[in-house]
Image (cartoon, rainbow, N blue to C red):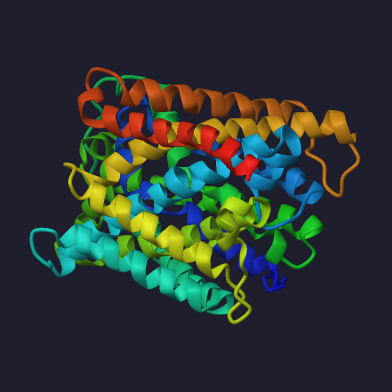
Length: 438
């Protein structure tokens, strides 16, 4: 029977991880973060803190991956820590809510910016979103080597573009407006969006079965990836503040576009659209790559989904898992196209479910430490403080993702999407018992 092959180097894994993290958030979140911080220094420190928390999580995942390397990522970790039931419900939720919802959300952003370059009519954004899902699913179906090559090309373009954006802002000599008031001082809300922008580093855990020497190299991939993203985010945000001032960042509806207009005129808007399109495509490509690996693990372990557990020798890909994931993502794109904002609806659909399992995965390390002992190829430094910090932040994000989205201001718009995500997750419980009987 065919199985995953160790085709990925540390550089390959790091490129895939960075591509998953650097998505559309860095073009959307800074204005909201600036509106909830009092000074430019506080604004930058919040981004640094988000990187440190993400690094804590990366260290936790590095030990889990060193203890149990494989293709399943969080699915494998949850199964080791809490049993088949937790792993099944997670894999079901990832297949139907978390990963497919994330793919659809970023696809809508790609559609919005691609439509600014060449509109396809009234449903232009949804059409572009669907085409991006189809094209990148087909590329992943073709093979792992083709996928990682595209990821390197797109990621190189994206990183160079973001560095150019940062440098342009830092050396723009822009005249910034004085800050008005303290920006509300809601640091918890600022951190919610900062951590959303850092989201995706955990995807590297799904590469364990395809990385050479995973017990050693997974730690390198996770840590190097988080450090690189943190440095890039801080530079870009320094560029925003240098060009526009903190108040200018607060007031902006599209902060990167305003920066580009400040340094390059209206033509900068088209350049920005291209940058965001590249960013969205790298994120979608990495999400499709890693998401299908969980579906493969589910099919390998449960006969009810046995068709997903077939590995295609040609190209070394989980073919059936990729195809099902693509269909589900297209269904969500269709559903999102019927709402006022497809991106925001998909974020509301996925966020509470995502942070539920993120928290549980952090707790797995505590369980395994007690059950298996401290010996491991890699161990989290300063345990249990680092693990506790990560779990506490996951609990905070879960709380905020529900209370923020369900408050009176946003509830009418997002409440049904949040409820739909939670109901789909809950449907995995009876489905697990049906799968176990079979």
